[in-house]
Figure 1 (cartoon, rainbow, N blue to C red):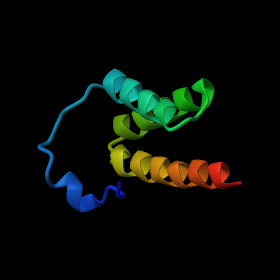
Figure 2: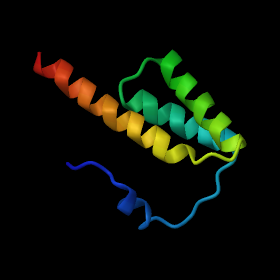
Figure 3: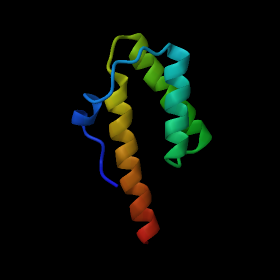
Length: 78
């Protein structure tokens, strides 16, 4: 189990997603990272907004989910 890096992104071919697909994908990813449904939906909406305005939303989401993984692991150690 290792952290995903930007080098890993070079291994995946470009994929074009619609804004609803970005929203759904990010919502599910956040929920899988143990965020509440409300926060997960906000993550999806935020990623969609970033995508709609031409920003690269994936690295932002990836970094937040990596931080969340650390937070959850620390909570389990307590």
